[in-house]
Image 1 (cartoon, rainbow, N blue to C red):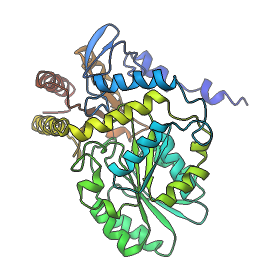
Image 2: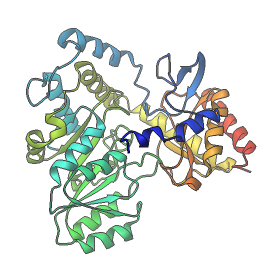
Image 3: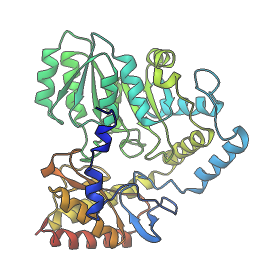
Image 4: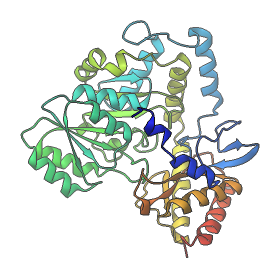
Length: 393
């Protein structure tokens, strides 16, 4: 037996390549705005998390340039030792204030934020109560933790209550995405809070896809529902609305201080680069002063969701800028994505084993800077491929 056998015998990607519909790792040679250039062809991007359109904002780009000139290209070490910049501390303070928490701690990726927080705060004898559709970084954080993980049905509050009732006397953390990354639906946070009051425990909300969008100033779903004071930990990422890389955890002073001195993914990873830190800092400033970006995105999301549903597409329970379009067949999903690409639309397929074979979909997501002309063309293309493959009437 050879440990490489599993790789040498794996053929799934080759089969898709041989069919001529392989959709992954497509190199883009232009800026990542509402258009990209793949293989020399311009395409309308509807697979990005650049929700507020800040990825090419001149102030963001200039802030990155100035940070490089002042601090250099990298911190060359962990924030625990030599990698803490003054702008990092400034960003942590402003993030904590933004999400109405006492303190915040920056990690070098959003993935590490969930990994670091969950594996450190939940230990042997504790319980993590996790929504079945939570992001992979939450799943992996639970695995790295020595706590017992119990899943409840997706947004199923009856099932959550059953789980909580079974563990009423155990120390526990209820973890949920604010906006779920595939379905685009929103967690039932008011009911989760109600159950927390009844059965005890703490609540952690992953605001990766809701930060900048939900709430009076984009603070997230906790503020959107007016119950942020009931949330005990917030996770956010810089790779969506804040158009950088990195992430953060916000909570009480004591929790954040504990993570600072005990979280291995923080202590043993190099610190976020000066440019990335400056980009997130400037993006946060723009988000707070330009609410019209958020308002525009909500108009776009409603326009597209209503139009898709009128065509006959199943958009699940989307309530955000993420709008899934159900296909229900692996090969159809790949083929439709390829044809959309030929029409000049960059969309992303979601197939098994990420989802069951009869629940495959094309995941679309929108940006505040998409033009009506671009959006109308996208709808025209989806109507054509949907009808051709008999996914819509």
